[in-house]
Length: 200
Image (cartoon, rainbow, N blue to C red; front, side, top):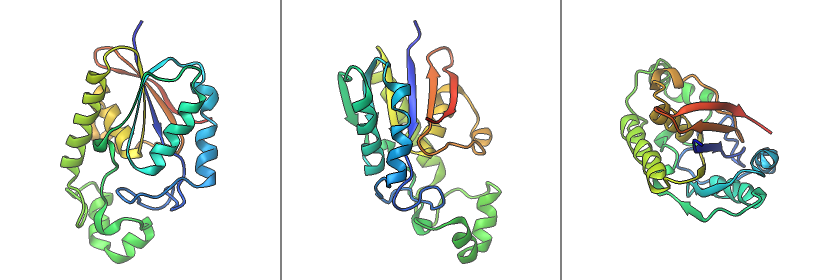
């Protein structure tokens, strides 16, 4: 039987991750975010997870804890992976799209058109993608037996799918990755996206 990688994006944060670009900033889950993740409990209850891996940022740590408590059998391994941190948005951390456009109209236009190579005073996009791709490949290599539950961020979910399933960065850029959503990848050659953007 093929093993699976279950990818979860954390829930809404106290800093409104639904509208604000919180990347490296460590903002906690809001009550709404906790409820979003709680709704996934029935979907993971019967899974046999061998390893639970999460980003070290508190919104992912708490989301992982909620899901861990829902599992019928505790995973043998629970670990935090530093390289699963979200991208550092630099000068635009914590801003809304409208605030970014007002403050940096030319950069915002280029960014919207996919023409920038990084964030002002933040991460370069190619370096971020490379870091996360290495981390995701490292997770599946470190835990070769059994299913894996990985709890992280929007950018990490996108890069994981792109890396393992061969979806182009250009295609996946427009995908919606909902807060508190579950994505299921099945280990084949290449990995196959089995379930998309499932919310409780």
